[in-house]
Image (cartoon, rainbow, N blue to C red):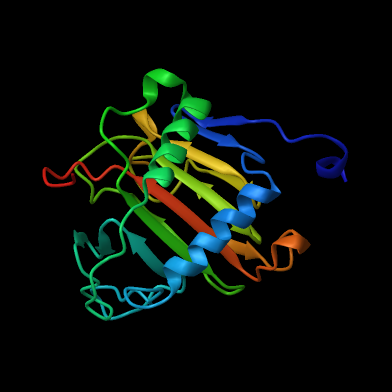
Length: 220
């Protein structure tokens, strides 16, 4: 009830890690969802990620700019259909830069351009284990947007996958940015909350749009 009566406030979850609720209004959420649906289509579309140990991730993924696979990046969908990865649009990079300025202040906006997007789709049973985003060569802040069903987002520490950590409920339209001393913090999604997406969004499940700076010398 309280969440409906009172606006949610932005929260500094850890040094350099900020949750900004309702950063995208309904129109912006609809536009981003439409773009995600286009990106998810083949070639180099939504695929199941296979881990080096032979398992599979329960969240499915599509990439822009560079194709991520455990544990590296490629220009083609090397563990999918082999097609060239879709380009990273300039407007998405501008969104990332504005988001960093909003969450962490203008001094935290990196000089390098944002050039990678990892878009994960979670159905009701999908999870994401604790991990670090450490395959890039840049320590620029990571920008993350949520669409659709809410989730429990577990934000931990850079040292290990266990305590201390903080559980945050991310809802559709929420922004989460982590950089500075929290850039390499472990994080994951232990639970999706089915049926919590805004009715007008027409999305069953959760999309997470994560924007990063690769830092690769040939990024441009």
